[in-house]
Image (cartoon, rainbow, N blue to C red; front, side, top):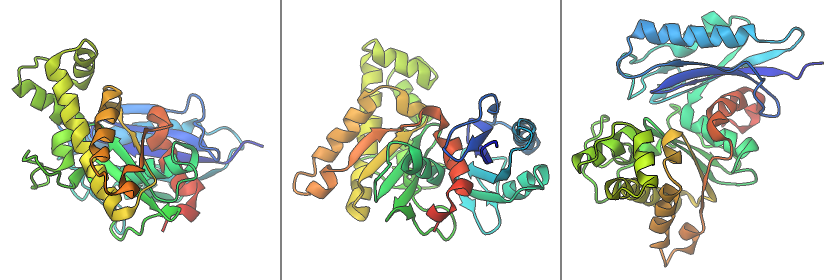
Length: 310
């Protein structure tokens, strides 16, 4: 018999994806579909993109396979009570009923919606770099910076669905304005677009994270400084979170997390400054063990591993 499957959806500031994922956290080959989102897209365009990927993945369900449900991870903030999302980097959607929209597309399966940061944390805890960890922070460093928490081996209690959103923890020493209204938020300092924007103020002429990665690899001093700045901010935010939560592992995924291994080196260096607090410096800061599949695997975990949800 075919293994039971979950239709996993990941909605973010750059793209929306959907795929079928089995109970081992493995994507069904050929079932992964992707469409662009972006901050210039209209609400109708975003709805169309979601519809296209969800229906395409649903059509890939093998004959005789059980569809256990649909797991949806979305950039935040979200509202789990209403199933609505208001992604900060997608201004066309404010209190958008994403869960209800997906339910109309797949009426024969239950829908579970959570913030994308929690999905990455669940994925890493289930089959990724955080297996065996008691307290884990999963992070996404991409168009934005998101996060989610597993504490005591389960998702942290999360009344509104936004717990662990480390991208909007303010990092000392920075005054960058954030779209959330704060200043010095980690997302405003260390996301891919904001790191590139800072580099451009220093004379960098590239426009993308990919261009920054290439310049860093080539030894460009501005790119090196930009990655050091972002990595240091990430490390300081992790130190603060570890002081608060006694974390074992921080697993970081997302496109910009792969800009250079130096990003992780700078984050770890920021942790070593806590010389009097070995419980902070002990935290392992590691790349995602799941490459770019983590958000989809985590969305599937919402259904395959319901015992992990608080």
